[in-house]
Image (cartoon, rainbow, N blue to C red; front, top):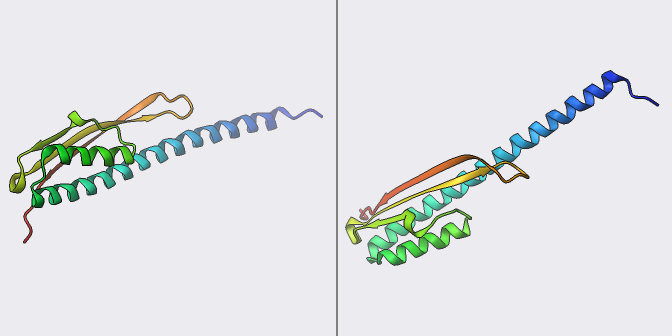
Length: 125
């Protein structure tokens, strides 16, 4: 039984739309997932800065706490991307890193999202 040419074209168009939808939803999911993880990292950074400022923790300890959290969230953060200035009441922490958003299956970068965080110690009122 032969399939009419018109029905065959419709199937091809349908599969193309399914493929486009797959790529779109994958990229959207990847972007939303990365943004959610960054937001969680930003909240943790705020917490660590407040805690480290109150307890006068050293820069090395702050950096290691942030690196552990970044690894837990699968964020590509390296030690040199964390800048810790001052200490105690004058503590400032800056974190900048890039995350690549890849094409599904090919694992080729199509977009790079940059995240910057600047936190400073706020004394309790």
